[in-house]
Length: 266
Image 1 (cartoon, rainbow, N blue to C red):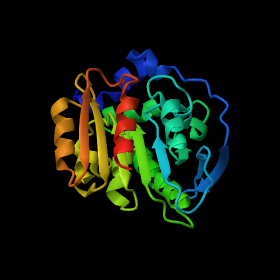
Image 2: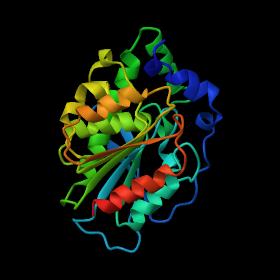
Image 3: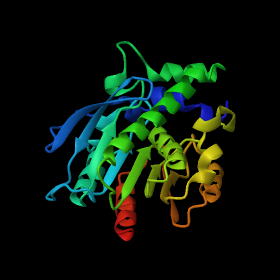
């Protein structure tokens, strides 16, 4: 079994980090919205306004995307694997309006008894359709959220960031959305090119945004050489690749790398 097709085995069953869902903290300045996807599905969205700054058309925006089996609440709690609460608050302190959404079959969008892991199992069993539909649908949903975020103005910066599966979705979105100015991806999994447009390697040639790629040298789901090839294939003129001494779950220090990179882009 190839590393890119072992997502469910370790992320879901071998790693307690992947299974533990952080509690949802109380967050000030948050607004709940429901958008409508292209196919009519509902997209629950949480919008967090920047700290200490009046909203205007130029306010930078950020769309954050979570990993497999996780939810948008990952970006509210300072807990592994994402440590997203600190990331979100840093963005808000820097003046960003932050948009959070659940992937299809995740979070508020998961039906009772439904397990996203089963879609990956079916992929392993030679039935890729449901998994491909989940990813492609989530990319389309993220594009709807982005369009909503950009209504009525032209922000100074448009950032999309994602962790693991969220990084995969972020890369696919950046490949089709030139309105995105900045891209941050943490440990995107290596996806077989036979899966077409849901494999970042097949579309990275259209990624021209400023790009920060964070990977790990012991990541079972993204071999070092695959991550390097993905990075090299992007035509972006402003890109940076940093590698950590870790597995798929990055150390919390990755947030410092993100903050340094964002500060340098101002």
